[in-house]
Every structure is written in C-alpha cells, then in structure tokens.
Amino acid sequence: MASGHGAKVMTGGKGSKFGIPIKRTIPAYKRAKDLGFDIKGIHAHTGSGGEGIEPFTDVAEILSDLTNEIRDKAGIDLEFIDIGGGVGVPYRLQEEETDVEEMASLVTEIIQEETDVKTVVIEPGRYTSQTPRFY
Image 1 (cartoon, rainbow, N blue to C red):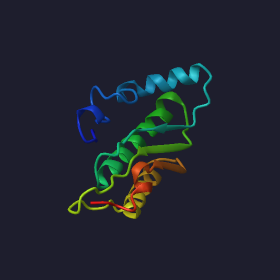
Image 2: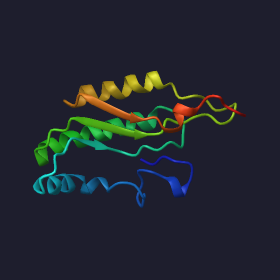
Image 3: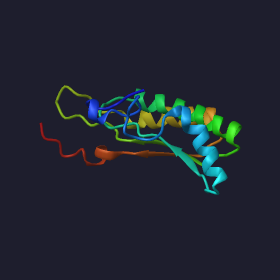
Image 4: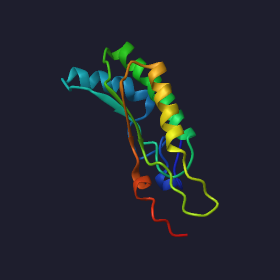
C-alpha cells in the first residue's frame, strides 16, 4: 500500500524511505526481544498525502494481522497499534474533508475485532491545523 503526493513522499511502497519491509518485521521483533528490548507496540507511517478513510482502514487490517503474527511467531503481546499519521486536509474547494469520526470508528472496530490490543494511536499531522483555510 502506498500513500503520498509524489514519488519522494510515498509511504508503504517498495523503496520507501520509512520503516522496514513487512517481510522483515517478525525477524526484527525477534531480534529486539533477544536483545532485551521492552517491546510495546507497532507503528506504520500511513502518510498525509490524501483524503479519505481507506488508507487508514487498510493499515489497520495490515497491522492487526501483523500484531497477531508477532504474538504467534515472536511471542510478543503488543500493547498498542499506531496507525501512523497524517489525516489528509483539503486545500481546494473541490476536495472533501476526511470524516475522522467514521475513520476512527472503523479503525477501532477492525483492531478490536482482530486483536487483543487495547490502545490505538493516530498522529493527526496537518489535520490539527486545518483551520482557518485559505483557498
């Protein structure tokens, strides 16, 4: 899954400048555990380039699956899932605002139904400074 305005800010795709490849997640968690780290959660950089709910529900599904895989394969029970940051903000009249209440409800529902994790984190980014808007 990739999100972002352009190639230099794409997130979640092959060659992304953020995070580690998903295939390396379980080995990374196992290694961190072996080194004695007190592992609490998982985080994804969803990106702030677009509007809409789908990138957040997609990442909630991916992180829920990964959280269960970390528990099953690495023996680590995570306390939080951070679905990343940046709720998109409209910059033009024709752009719609993201319905953050619906997004929060759907993301929370996915994580509650699919995992035992009790804490969900989001980083709102530019959304917190969206008013006043100048068009």
